[in-house]
Length: 287
Image (tube, rainbow, N blue to C red; front, top):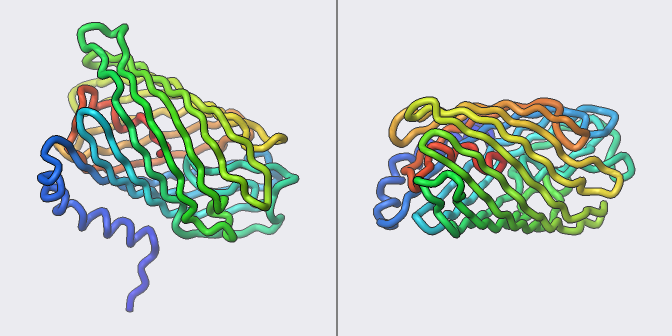
C-alpha cells in the first residue's frame, strides 16, 4: 500500500468534502457551512539558544447563521527544534524558557495537534449607516489535548478562553479589535500562567472579492521568566468564485515570545453569511 502523509490525508479530506457541503447546508436552511485548509510556516528562537521551525496545517469546519457561528479546527503539526523551547503549534503554541526547556537535543516531531472548538455569538450586528456603532461579538474556545504530549506537540492539558470583538465598518473599510483571556492547563513538567491577549487591525476592500489589511497582536508570557508575544500580520484575500476564497499573509515578530518570521495561506469553501463577509478571512486568523 502506498504511504500517504498526514498532510496528504488532510488535503484529500478537504477535496472530497466539497461535494458534500451543498447537501449538508440544506439541513441548516437558515445558516451556512464551510470548510478550509491552511498552511502556516514560521521560524524563530523564541528566547532560547537554538531555532525552532514550525509547520501548522489546520483543517477548519464551520457552521454560521445570523446569530452565531461554530468552528472546529483539526490541525497537523510539525516542529523542528534545537532546544525544545516551544510546545504545541498555531495559536496554542506555548513558549517556555531555559529553565523549563524539556531537552537540549535537536529533534523533529510531527502528528495531530490539539483540536480546538470555538463558538461565537453575535451580540450586536452594528449599524451599516453609522460607522461609529460597532458590531459586537462574544467568543468562547476550548482546546482539547489531543496532541502527543511526549513529542512536545501539546501540553497534554485542556485550555479555555473567552474573548470579545468590536468591529467598526463601512462598505469597504473596517477597524477591528479583540480582547481575550486564556486559562491554560497545568502540565506536570512546567508551570504555566493564564494569559490576557488582544489585537487591533485595519482592513480595506479594494474591489469586490479582493481585500487587504494589517493587524497587530499581543499576548502575555505563559511563564514567569518568559516574554510575551508581539507581532504584526499583513494579508491579502481574494475571492476566486462566489464560494472559494484564498488568503495569503506574512508575519513579523517583535519579541522573544513570537516567531521571527512566518507566512501562511488558506483555501476556504464557504457560503457567506453576515454583512461583512469580505472581512471574515482575517478575523481570528490563528484559530
